[in-house]
Amino acid sequence: MGRTWPYLVLLLPPLFWAGNFIVGRAFASDLGAITMSFYRWLFALCLLIPFTFHTVRTELKIIIKNLPILSILALLSVASFNVLLYLGLRDTEATNALLINSSIPVWIVLFGVLFFGDTLSTRRGIGILLSLAGVAYLILRGQSDELTVNPGDIWVISSSIGWALYSLTLRKKPSELSGSGFLAYIVFFGVCFNGLLLSVNPLNEPPIPLTIDTLYAVGYVAIFASLGAYVCWNYGVGQLGAQVAGQYIHLMPLYGVILAYIFLNESLTLSHGIAGTLIAAGLLLALRQPNNAMASKSE
Image (cartoon, rainbow, N blue to C red; front, side, top):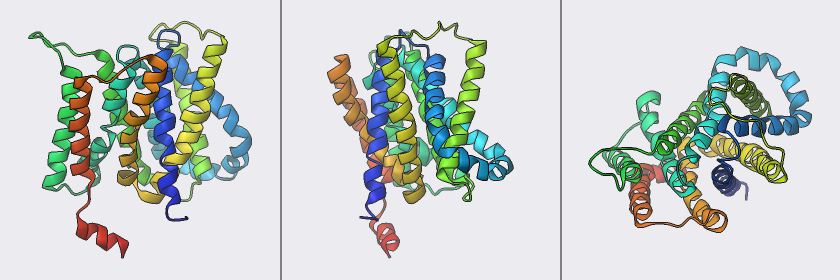
């Protein structure tokens, strides 16, 4: 059970995050992107403090010593991912966003080669091109001679790229810093960053409406899509590595399509099917390890 536990735990973040897409789309007209992200993480921070205060106090010197890399990790994840995603969900369907988001494993492979010295085989290269072709088809489908792109899709791609960079940069997280201390810091950084953005309010967002529905929405994304998903994801990446964990992200469309059908009345179209097939084929090529490599790892 010990060996399989990380694989089972990694089944949960895609489910929680798929729910985040559904909530973000459902409340796109009621909650501003910065507003929702700020209150989401503020609520999560309040829940975290009682459990992590002693740990953070004990590991404060480690946090201060590694402040630059920890702040970069926080900026790539908590501080920016959801703002960009919620901006995208104002203009694109949750199903679209989920399919685009499923390209994250390919971005992980691509940026691993470009910035972290990972190897790139011919098979992986073809896989990357196939998946990116699927994303391109999804955002350009049905266009006329005058090329226009849904801005929502671009925001979602930006959030996906940021998350891929975060997953890879986790390699540089100080090993002496505990998971709870790390999570507490990046959530604290995200609250401060989003709070600063909200005080400037560049998008002219209205105050959060205090209704039962919005409280449920913020509560869900704070408890499940924030704390639960991050704990499970960071544990899985730490145990299995970013590239293995990244494969689980393409479960999000499966979860998300079901949730979008139930709660948003969205359905898959032929364009979604073509794009999803290209992305999935690219994932299989880019992430599948040769048999000899798998054998050497098992030894």
